[in-house]
Image (cartoon, rainbow, N blue to C red; front, top):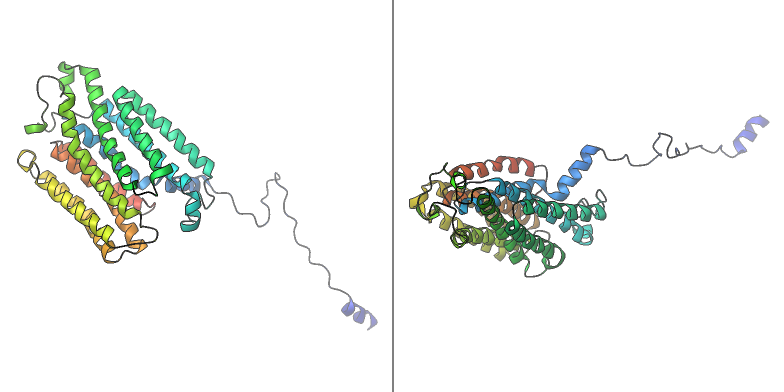
Length: 362
């Protein structure tokens, strides 16, 4: 009886908790978060670089090559490589520059969430920029000059111009320069490989049998002034579309006035109608079909955002505007008579749409 009374009065025995394992013994400390595997890391980088938007890039160079009246060649391939690298450099630099803002508005992004360090994002931007300029240099000095101007525009946008009224114009200039890069690299490679000889003539597009104003004149390559005139129209079309989408994207976080998506709706629809009607007699009905696909991709989301400019609908309009670049590029190639190139560009649409379901392009 006395023993049982003493046991009741005694303090309870301390509960022993297992000690955390020491680092290096092959065990994980209690309560530690498991390390992210390779697959998760790849997904983090895919989200940082917005790889679903990457399919909108090759069409710039291909549309530029088609505008020159030459067949896509080695220089075009270098231009595509440069464009892809510089585009991804801009994506990585964008998240590095916006890391403080994203910590408040988009804490789920890879940099503010800690999944990718700011140093790694900035390093990736630098390496991708160097790779892009290297690709451009392989296409020749004129292409390197255009790529350098494109690089300066991208870095200026991310570091300085993004939150200024000049942002849409900077992005529009970047897209236009990307198309010019494809045209310049294609012409440089054709001149270097053929110099107007029989081999140079083989580089001209035979797949489409161009006629009318887009056909290279004379027995050799088109003149610089002629190519510049042909390139100006598609470059301006890309710039106009990019300006409209960028203007809408400035309100995708907080929403905004319905006037901006409404203006984008009017601009993109007008652009599609103009591209469908121009040169219909020399290029057939195919440009009209691709232009209709372009308007269909971008118009309805812009209309929804104009009726309800909430952040989700605005983001959807921006994402659709980015994907609409692909049918726009196909339309520009088709207007130059390069129907095979246009079909190849359109083939990127299903891949871009499928990947966009997993990784947001915005």
